[in-house]
Length: 364
Image (cartoon, rainbow, N blue to C red):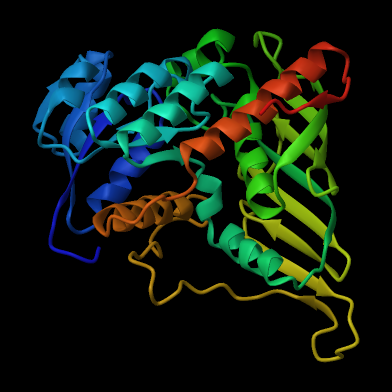
């Protein structure tokens, strides 16, 4: 952090396990403290407050929002209830950080994005995948023009399943409920994949998607989804998401970007994460594949060396966010507008799947 001012944080709900990751990150960051926790599940919320040494707990999130000793609020409740909480936080004049997807309905996401703009506060969507050091380097390489004009992309992102990766039973229950979670693998892991693709390549204008349940007979939504994308810049892409992935660390986030001058491959959650770049130019020194060793920038306001490679981005995300809040830099991305744009793609994907994969334009 860059000043002596302490950022005072309120946290609404421990329904999503990411609240635990972010509380851990906050505990390691100077000049940041969790002032209060609210959770309608009293046992769960009180246990979290005890673990992280938070003295103030309430079962009513509105009490937390009304406090005048909180600078920002982090929301980790069930996807379907984000909207009212985020809007109330914004209207109270506090910055708000919302777990992804920011909502299950685009009309709710519109209300949320509008609320933060009207209030003049920061509204941040928790697309933590942007904050892996591999994604950060991939962004810099693509933006540099090193691989030329993007032609097409391929993305695979998924999990063994919500229960299979060790999420708490209460989280499994609501995540696997299509009303509370908004769907299955497509809205959950697909949200990360779609946001990364928008961030790296550009807005998506059209989608053709298919969903299926291949290995989760008790699940009332999809455990696999595959989509074909058309970007507004003319590039094409494909994305596969899953909740039934049988792989080493029970998750995968891999991305390939093919350009006119080269190719980039990002492996963010492999056992040994890395970025690979192929340059097919006339410069013999750089022609062929290179694998950059990604070191933290000396200007980064945090140290995440003690975090496992596949979760370090939670510390990197929270520390970067709090540093921007401390310096009052606006906006800090990804914003709620990014959350809205991502959700529009997700909902269009579900609409396409319901129509047998028919090409569906993205509503703006």
